[in-house]
Length: 503
Image 1: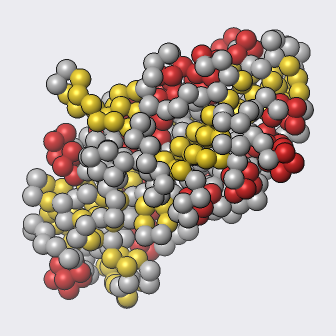
Image 2 (image 1 turned 45 degrees about the horizontal axis):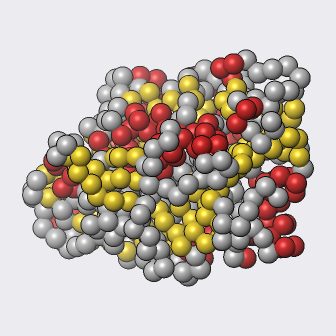
């Protein structure tokens, strides 16, 4: 039976050595008060310690002094297992200083491994990750020098087929944020952007005889409608009621609490950009790339659009009338709306449905998308892509590996080089005013996020759209298939490459 507790009381349920699973998505829907109560306790008692923390998509709030950053920095955590570290500003720096073990697994594979544990299985099989960095035959999932746990990902064969086997430590504590708890302890998520892995996490924790702690905005007398009660009260140990954070009207719109028709998506997107401190920036290269990439969309496509330059695809899809003829999706579980960027990435404007994250990755892993548009840090002559880690910095693979593993058409959107690149477009002609000093096309990528060999074997169509030309992946490597007006093929493309390409 659940109990209503203060955050400080609830955190006493956590013991040294526990494995905590946090339900959140990059920078949204993290149970901030629970994290900060844990930090208060650790400061006072140096306990709980030797913690392992798991999160499919990370659990930061874009602030190095809030949420979990404090207790991680002070030494309460021995091991982190996350799909993405982007919003964890302090933590991702400490990872590279070898302060604790840290592992980066594809977001969807963590989600599926949590669901497997909820069903009494030790782990989950997947073809996602084969031949990229997480494959133990490549680098493995460890991010730093002390992260050498070989149990998390194994290469296996089943019935003559190869898979990666993802196995997580037994989860013993759930930290969840919900909207409301009714008098039976049932938890609803009505005013939230997503429910993520919440139910699977709770089921896994109870299977392991652990504790489920849920932070909610309010208690309600009227029982939730059965389909709205994402977590049944019988799975909950502690409910912590906190004052809800104030939300701008623009962010409130993302909860689905009122309908946003297609014709109003642009207005709400602009409102969100105005209040977000991490709004995307407009640029000539982004416009060129987005316009060309959007030409690959077809009527009735099911689509995923990555963050950064790929977001420009949606702008041009709206301009050419295609946006209303395709179905957009986002990794957190939203489908049929318009994904937002910045601090609220993971939420959707006007979503038709928001379901459990593991179900979304069922769709992605099985080739349910028709096309995806992804960013890239580096591309080599074979067509391999690094999208998750640069020299001295990383954010993590997130859902990138799941999305690109089996989608029939994969479009990478990237500049030819960076740091100082200055490009203008005048009357349809591209003018390269200045080249960047850091090349994006390299002899060998630092780490493989996307395997060209695997894509060729899968029969995927792969394009690399830049601000000056387009390449296509072939069994021989990259082939130059298009050069934009104003671009000198020899000077602006071929001489800039460290490898030869097919023409």
